[in-house]
Image (cartoon, rainbow, N blue to C red; front, top):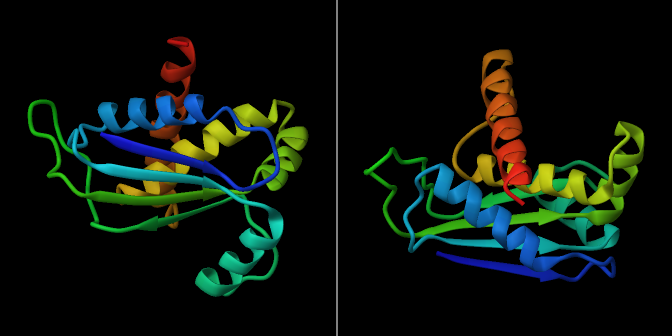
Length: 150
């Protein structure tokens, strides 16, 4: 499994921790060991540009996901096929603002957002109430079990 983490944001990021989270989530979701994931941390200007270009919404956002090969979760003993899962792009500055409002650390917020972004790459969404309930419960379980194992 190839997980590449790039920090272009100017904020300090423990790249190894985010690679470990990516590996944990992909293993838990039974994604093929030859799947590729790219996690990129960017500044607010870059995130604003991406947000306008891809979502037609102004200003920076916290996380964007760009799926490539449309891989979906596998099952125990039946992983997905190999391929490129896609890119998760995060903005630490926006995450830090959200973390203060939520009462936890910026790192915890970015770990949450990374998990959220990976689930979007795997086809999860939260447009409808039932989808949101399923995705957010899975997101919470994955993050809590990752953090408990650290």
